[in-house]
Length: 285
Image (cartoon, rainbow, N blue to C red):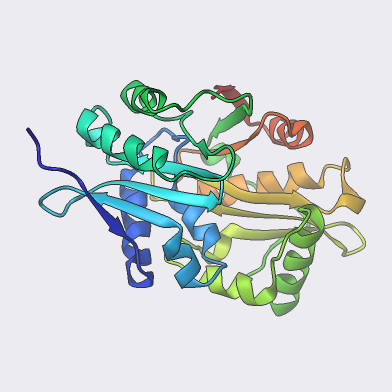
């Protein structure tokens, strides 16, 4: 019988290593719906201690990483695992037992839509059930044809006013957002952040109207959108589609095989914008 997998509590000094592991685990060509480096990259706008406290790593008896869990809220979390261990029942059982032992007040959501069957079965044995909160996974393959110039879209990095405006769009687009210029600079220090992948769209009057950040785990791999938002005063005017097209051009230029995003199916407006920009639903996950 295999020795027990060891749970490792992540500390701030581990964050760059976790980032590297997640990028290595992301497949070439495809785009998984599980935890990705971009998820943790975007989270790094918060204090390192807070981000580290939200992460748990499982290691083999030999010290090799096997799986990583990120809790993005008190009631929900996301998994990623070494591609070579997706059928490892011992690891699946270990993590399912840990998830069930968290004993939150109320319902808890563990992202299982992208997990292999063995992992879903292990969770169900411990009382987890499928929820009605269905996610839409949208994807678009990229090629040299996507390397186009998009008018009115600029890179924020190195432009103080663009960063201020990008933060303002984010706060307006997402209710209860706590984004600040200081938090933008914090996430920009992360190893997965690329200066040319944080973009701001302006209208003909120069008003900031939409913003996007994309993440790329490596050449030949799929880029990820996290996040994209349009200022509520400027919606349904094509600005979201425009900034997504500019992000696709930046990713294609960097050698990305595609671009993907996972968003709640209930967010019809977001799904509509992504589809208008050329992304297609891979299915309800």
